[in-house]
Amino acid sequence: GIIIVDFIDMMREDHRDAVLSEFRKQLGRDRTKTMAGGFSQLGLVEMTRKRTRESLAHMLCEPCDACKGKGILKTARSVCYDILREILREARQFNPKEFRVVASAAVVEMLLDEESPHLAGLSDFIGKPISLSTEPSFSPEQYDIVLM
Image 1 (tube, rainbow, N blue to C red):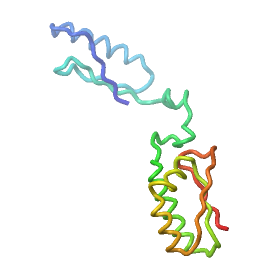
Image 2: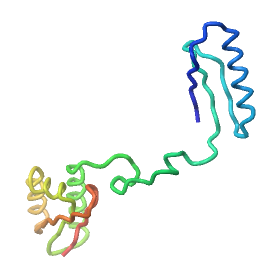
Image 3: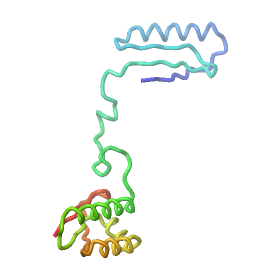
Image 4: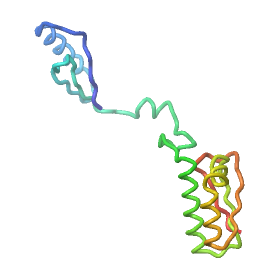
């Protein structure tokens, strides 16, 4: 990876040269491939060092169960739209008597409130009832569509 080193401000060029020389000498002792540039106008030294193992975060942490390590979660509204699209796809492919959506409380609440016109419209369009149930153990992005 790339590393930026911010040494203390040195006015004299001979001091900067001495520090850079010692820095490079010590880097030479490193068994991993390294490279150090000179001082920038801001007094910074840019260096590179080949990564030899997993990052510290990767070694000490594990991915979030909710986002699967992505660092982001879909909004409840976005999950609602995913559900509506999947119901439409499954209605075209199969011929169930009805659909049951099992999802997190936030998603079910959104489907019953702000997205209820879309849910009712889809139910009318496919000619099948769509029921909802909450599963407390589900993450915000997790849902099941049960064909009945």
